[in-house]
Amino acid sequence: MDNCVFCKIINGEFGTEFVYENEYAVVFKDINPKAEVHLLVVPRKHVESLNELDDEALLGKLMMAVKDVTKKLGIKSYKTLINTGKEAGQEVFHLHIHILSGQMHF
Ligand code: AMP
Image (cartoon, rainbow, N blue to C red; front, side):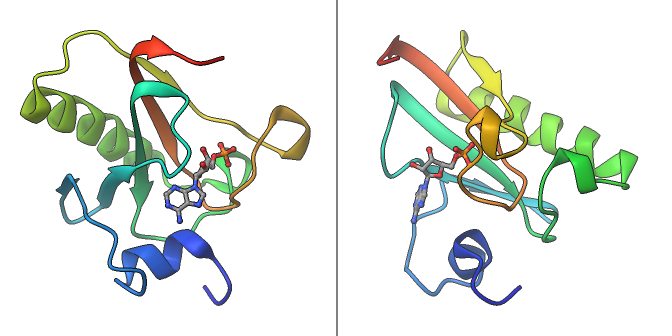
C-alpha cells in the first residue's frame, strides 16, 4: 500500500529491526514507547483496521505471534491493545497489536 508507514517498514524501506517475524507478521519496537517494553505486531498484509478485517484466521495468527514473540523475549506479563478508528486513538491505518510491558507511561 503506497504511503503506508507500516507497509514501508515491512518492505525494509526504513531499515527497522524486527524483533520477531514469520510468514504472517513482523514485530518491531514502537518508535515512541508508552511502556518499558512497547512492541507492535503488524500483519504483512495491509488491512486498515479491525473494522476492515475479513480474514478470521489472520487474527489468530497475529495473536499467536504475540505469544511467540513474548515467549522469545521472556516477557511473562503484558497488555495487548488494538486501537480502532481515529477517535479511539488509531494513528497508523494498518492493523497492529500493541504489546505493553513493564512500567507504563499513560
Ligand atoms: P496507533 O495509535 O494504535 O495507530 O499506534 C501507532 C503506533 O505506531 C504509535 O504508538 C507510534 O508511536 C508508532 N509508530 C509510528 N511510526 C512508527 C515507526 N516508523 N516505527 C515504529 N513505530 C512507529
